[in-house]
Image (tube, rainbow, N blue to C red; front, side):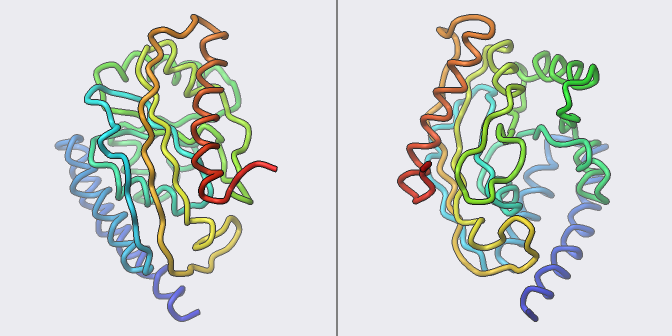
Length: 239
């Protein structure tokens, strides 16, 4: 219990410290926010929590802007990919995140995308904005399930990220993150030690997919199949 309390206090301190750096960089040099505020913040939090990180497949990241889609098992998944990805990126996140002190402030100022995920007109505008911007970068990161899984198995996918990929004609990179469920499960504040794994899979290029809904559905199927294959190997297979 003492270690967990210490971890949460340290998290708050690190968030304020790197949040101040992130706020400054957000209004001066947005391209420096990830390497000098976000990435070190994530890495020091994982280290303080006694959480190791294994990263595989960085070579699969394309040189061009893409959409990285990750499975979502734990709140720690966010720290894991922030610490692991060696590139500049922007996330698609729930609007509620934008209200979190320092984390949300930096996210808004540095150009992350915030959606309500309710199919509203504002969400449609945000999708169009992403489609227009992503070709020139930076890469976009999204959890297609939309929320965390209780048991580590893939939940149904939401369509937004796949629609963006098909319309913008940018590759999709599936990414599997495991280990967080055992360290910090959904609904729990107790932090265990352990190791998280980030596995970046080969990019899926959308150029030859059918247009419209057919292409989107095909892309969703391809991403799910690749993710489930790795999750089966890691012991999170479907029944």
